[in-house]
Image: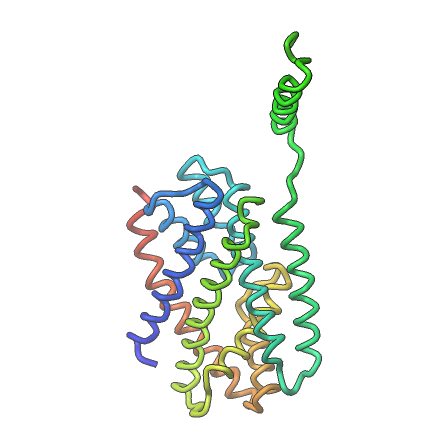
Amino acid sequence: MSFAEALGLAVAYLALKAWQLHLLLRNLGAEADWRRLALAFAVGELALTLPFGLFAQNWVLARTGRAPFGETAAATVVMLLVEIVVVLVFLAVVGIRGWPVVRPAAIVAASALCVLMAFVLHFEPRRAGSRSASAGRCCTARSRRRSICSAA
Amino acid sequence: MRRLSHLHVLGVNVVIAGAYLAALALAVMAVGRHVGLERFGFLMAATTYAFALAVVFLTGGLVSQIGTVEVLGMSAAQAAFGISYAEGLTLMLAFRVVWTGTMWLCNLPIVALLWRA
């Protein structure tokens, strides 16, 4: 493998992953400018081999801007879950000849992960702030119908 | 999190993940051919590395990838394609060196340039 080949594939790999992170952050409304994104992504990739090193990019994003760690970590979790599902689906299709158990195990694991992903993506934790916010929304909605918020 | 649950968002991410994992498999294949596995194709490379990645991912990042990926890849290559443990370990270690080197080469200058800014 020539140096140019390795570098070309690495650049393609990194560019695609960075683009994925950018798209996910944009969907979360936590879009970072290219400098912050590049720095966070580069630190994350360097720390990738460490346990929980994947979340280094979220730490950098939180330190360099106003994006809360928990919010950008959602993007990282989705990236990871999608990557695992893609790998498991590939193994479920291709299998490993000497290990026939891999294919059904991959199908079970991929299905379980899809269920987990559906749960994680639709889970909305109750927070004190959101409770008052939702109470406000509720009050506003009720006021339209029953006018019970007029005293408040 | 709900904002990420739309099908088109997940669909785009599946396509991107597939593309960058294909680039990774191409790199494994290229390293395999370079270390003397002449008939080491894309499917063989993808299967070998996918198994190692799947196990490491499913442990939730609790164990370090270093060492685990190599042993798992070596075992998968032996079970799936009859590649000897020695050749499999050579492949995985060579890939680790090449890939880690290129990752550092690409990312370290970015960190060095942007850290202070």
